[in-house]
Length: 490
Image (cartoon, rainbow, N blue to C red; front, side, top):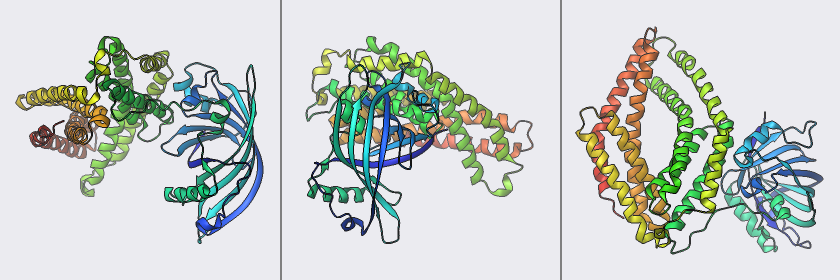
């Protein structure tokens, strides 16, 4: 089983004759240097799919953390590193790690693409109490590509990695000191990208006057990255991963639907259906997660004398097998040809988007009326819900319309600015309120099942009553939130 650490670091280019600044000037205490040699073999597909996604997979010997390392994007300057002991295998990565990159490999083989040898000198920066703030390493690197033809190159680089007690302000301070010594930020995010000449695909950058197509495609690029970044986290059952992956699929689907006048709807209809399938598969796991947490929170809020019997244990017995089965089903879906085909379809969409003539027009001229169309959709559904006798299903439809408006405004925000941001926030308020109502609708039959014929039935009955009360409160609060939303204009 892989162990996980999160590393936050910055890399710098250093001329061969550059001298490091006095590191004691930065934190007061600098120990080192320690010197050691590292050897690493990097694995990727023949077309460098991992490198293009900002992912690296290597087998490294030497140093205190030798082993198999998989590095995944984890925000600005940060990556999640998953480690597996070296073992006997040298030609193939461990199954634990290769399974986590299937969203990129999709059946393609992982083979050695580069060998990198590093002579490293390391200093540790600490404060006066001995807490380790950062690690600074000075690397002399010799690298060789592997395959039908090889090239060899060498360079020097500096890495600064935060310790447990360090912060980003310290990174900025170290960077200023390095800059004074002529050591500048590296153009490569990893040693592998430096040797193979492949950079991470960051997607399009929006200019000051983007077209409508530019804005929508930039958003779709973001959601593809989010979907793929969450894939290994879902496989590892990490906190909130299913939710975030499901949100990425819904955002992409909403964008394709709401902006069908920009990206031809006929060409994306099949894709939106597949995104709906993926969201549905993930939804089972997510719904169980939400309900379990919801019930535990409500139970802990009850006065102790009203929690009769071992209600928490009853919940665990109910949810544990269902959650395990839902996770298995989610991972099976992520290993399926259908999922890989979905990812390939997204890639094709972004590489050769079926843009309409409207996509070439200025975003500020086109996007407002399409976002307003999503607002009108919400207005119609809220009116229908408020006038319905049994409002559960109409409110659910209004919630979905509120979500589409929120994501539509989110797409347009880079081009339309503060007005789109304000509209997005109001739409989120409505969506959240109606989401609480829908969660209550889903929760009630589960509470009935838990309480029926159980010695803890009284407590589950109390929780049921709270869900009914919550639903009434959300229904009563909707008109005021809807009114606030109506005041926001693009």
